[in-house]
Amino acid sequence: MRIIGGTAAGKIIKVPKGQGVRPTQDRVREAIFNSLGASVAEAVMLELFGGSGALSFECLSRGAKSAQCIELSSKHARFIQQNLKLCNLRAGSFNVAVEDVFHAIPRLAKAGRKFDLIMADPPFGEKNVNTRSKSLSQKLLDDEHLPELLAEDGVFVLGHTHRDQLELTPAWKERKFMRHGDSCMRFLLRA
Image (cartoon, rainbow, N blue to C red; front, side):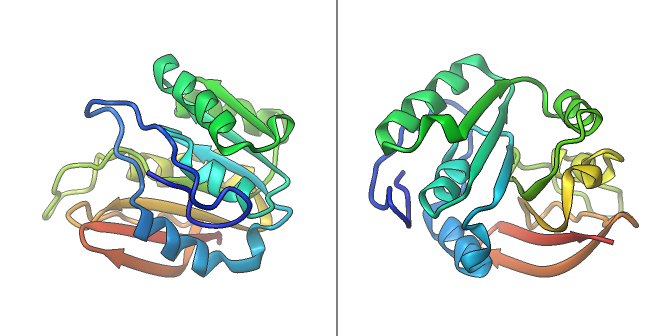
């Protein structure tokens, strides 16, 4: 896996082995960042379900002011720290917290944190025809504290599989929807 754009473009990052990590594909990341354009520069960014840290590193490579990455696995967090060094990015602008995303969100909200860009591409959920999704992506949409973390004009980019039909809650409005193969990305704003 490689960084697509910015100062670290072309740098190869390591991905932990096993089914616990499903990195956002290069072509999907390229489409996401083409859509976000210059809004990434100087952004304060939050990545949920960090995995390899690729989304954080793409942001920092493209001029984001800072990136906060949340990852539950300490093993994966070690890979993320190694990847930061491989990308030769500013260490002071990046932090990885080993924590459950759904504990981190209310903690960050209580601390009054605000992010210009929140990105999450969690492990894919199951197919859910005629039933409400129980996926991590749906759980993020349902989280009452997540909208509090997004700056007034910020964007929440959420990934999910096409077979996982999500239900937008009243807290969110969709700005854009993209599909690449089985990967879907939703660009959401606070309602």
